[in-house]
Length: 400
Image 1 (cartoon, helix red, strand yellow):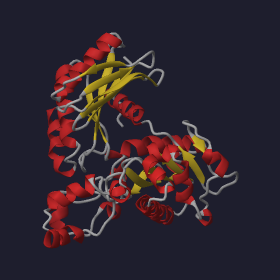
Image 2 (cartoon, one colour):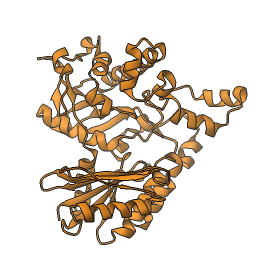
Image 3 (cartoon, rainbow, N blue to C red):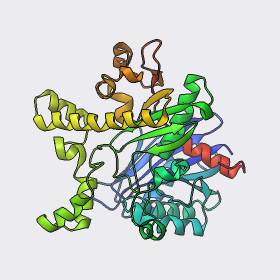
Image 4 (spheres, helix red, strand yellow):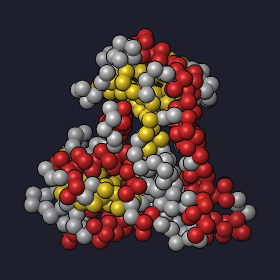
């Protein structure tokens, strides 16, 4: 029983991947998109031939997951035939309660739901996906893998905000960090690429996608990360502002009549590259910048400025950096952004070889010049594989 089904339930989607852990390869993957909306559809692929597709409507997650199970039955591989070992669920926020993956029972579901105020766009959908999957696949263990777990190693001084004690003790106001599953995978793979022990390896991980974060890893453990109590803090992102003066919320309420909930929504969904450049797709931002649009050029400048601030801060924090690893859609594929992010940082040992950086390749690779003091790596993240690994460690009784 070496197969693990990894499920990622969003507010209007279910994304999934079936992995054969004996070969560490996917057997099938797909997604149900626009659940509860017009134009809902399912796409299921086994990597052979055309994908299996089915139009909606899918009014809720239960109908969406039923369609996923039907797709496995009709297009393969049959889940009963592969003897499914477990189902792994990506859960965004585990708070301070969960520093490792855990087999799901009713109490765990309640805990995930309790952290919904800290991740209102994610945890409610995670709960719904877990509940539906447990009903439809009752004969196998279900395991929650938390995106915040990797950052539970943050020292107290790194996760503590200088705010009133009651906020911290009664309301859980602190830094939690996100992209932890990706960071866990990338930190281990980067150490393997360097032929070093993860416990002796210091890294800066830049997960750059529509969501973006920077993480300082010391000896395999997260010691600081740019995202905070929610995924809003830190780097400039596709639609999120990243760092800003918190008094802006009160200022806009007093002077623009905007309520805090509206400001929060705007900072999460209407800010970042979208607000500055008019688009949150980095490829389109570059196209607009190359065409001379000032807003797009400014967006790139702001993005790079914030990124370089975090790189410099984490070099200072770690003292010794063995490698800087780019991952995520932008980090893995945008050579121009990688070059700009590290331009002029040679005095910190950070540089990319222009020829290595320019080659479009999908696999892991090193971009730094020969003899560089710090290795610059591209490590494509494999979050589903990392989740499946953690799931099997739980179900096979070897912990996390």
